[in-house]
Image 1 (spheres, rainbow, N blue to C red):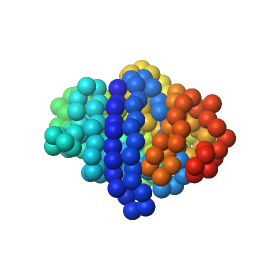
Image 2: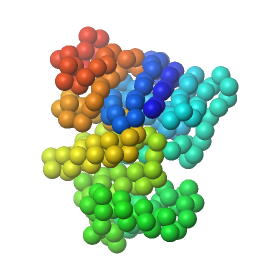
Image 3: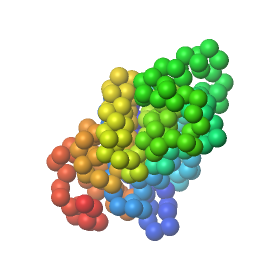
Length: 232
C-alpha cells in the first residue's frame, strides 16, 4: 500500500494533498494540464524534493521531512513509465529491459531470467535484438512497461501512457497493466486526461485542481464537470 501526504510550493499554487493506493488497486489521477499530476508522481519517485511530506510504501518510509528521511530515487522500488517512453534508441530491446536490473547490480543469471520472462509477458520476445529507436510507439511503451516491471516494483506509476498510442496499442497496454497489477498485488497510479481511460482501467479516481484534491471516488461515478476548475 502507498500512503503519501505532500506539500510543494509551485509557481502558481501550492500542491497540498494526501493520496492512498491499496495493493492490487489502480488509482487514476486526473486534472487539467498544470494541476500537479506529474509533480505528484515525481515527488513519490524521489525525483523532486517536497517542502514537507510523509511517504510510506509497503511499510517502508521513503520520505519524511520532519525526520530527514529521504530514500534516494534509485533505491525506491518504483516502476515509472513516462508519457513518451524513455527507451534508449541505440540499445536493443533486451538491453533496455535489462537496464534497471543492471543499475541495481542484480546477478547476471537473474537478469537473463527476468528479461526473458517479461519480454514474453508483454509480447516483445521477437524484438529482443532490435534497436529500440526502430520500434513503433506501442512497442516502445511495452518495452518501458517490461523494464518497469522487471525490477519487481512495490509501486507502478504511469504518466499519460496512452496519449501517443493508437486504439489497439492503448487497449494492449491497459490489459497488460491491469493484469500485472492484480497478479503482483502492487499499488498503481495512472495519470490520464481522458475519462474513458479512467473508467476502463481505474478502480478509483482522484481529480486534482491547482494542487488540491477536487474529487475522489469510483471513475464511473465522476461528475460531468468538477466544480472548481471545470475539469472534463
